[in-house]
Length: 256
Image 1 (cartoon, rainbow, N blue to C red):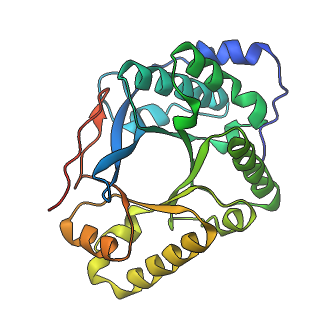
Image 2 (spheres, rainbow, N blue to C red):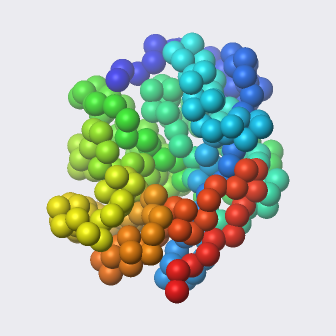
């Protein structure tokens, strides 16, 4: 994955904010990330949806090399705008596309402008890096530079789907994020699979030593939750707690 060959132009910010270059519309559903220690909502993840509630792939299938940068930027603006409209008090977690970020300090401008316009505290924004393709040395350096820049700007960072596909251990060593989200493939039936348990236990130890927190995502059963809870994980996301709410903030339920 290489950095996109785009030169910065001041006009980019204004173009991105209004969605120039996109010929489709979209919105978001929000799913809570809960803190079971305090029985509260830690954050809501913004999940892209069609304007009629269609699934994420109905939107993501329309993203290509030509419109990826504009889509990534409009996602940020729309997520912040909708979170502000819904009076979100928790953290807001936004997925970002690293190959759409050519310079973090430039590409963050639309986010900062949206936060100011809609009066949303930027300290409540988490940027999630999705783990979806192999990395070479150039792309690792690029991702590390983005994470470090976001940290310096006061944003929280997260690696999504950790344990699926191409692991980001090289990023963990260079610039550990604030949060690591266990992939649901590791979570599924973890209570009855010793090999998964060993892998998860190792990840927990790693994050403790790096000073970050773990979010177990895709938790669907009490058995999965109780095993993960016994390992000291406090943050969770999944149908056991709440399904995504289309343009709303669903209230989670906590297992007894």
